[in-house]
Length: 180
Image (cartoon, rainbow, N blue to C red; front, side, top):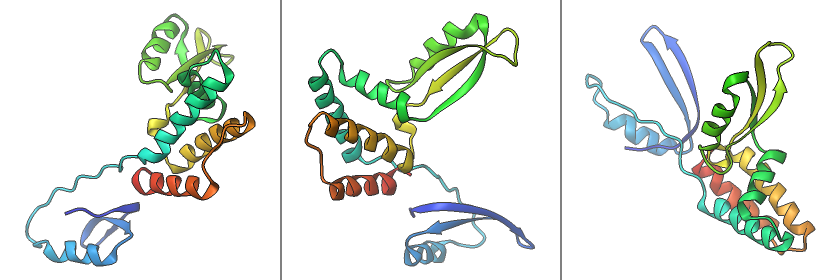
């Protein structure tokens, strides 16, 4: 049995602890609940749905076209620049003698996973601030939309033909339905 949801809530009452799911199909939810036997134990597996292949594939097509138009850049470098410009990041303190090892390990996480040593931490002696950028494979719908919008704008600025706003919206809605 499987049901899609986009939010969850925890609550407690005299019958115990509950997890309530915000669902898109009340009919399916009722069917699932009706099939459960009250005295039996069940295991629920919750996972985030995979991302829209259309949005991701389109992003890479545009990165390739931009790289071809700019010359001297690869599609991976176009993507990495976009992630640094508008992507998700954190700033983490790393012991000064461990910075290079940390950066090497972080960047082994994928093309979008990048790390930049921002220098000594003003608040933690012996530590550096390292800016770590997250690759788009972990992005939710909003985060991916920002990244794709940025890449589309860059393509348009170079005179590269892009999809219509309606087609972009369709791809992002699939990302939302299958990823975020």
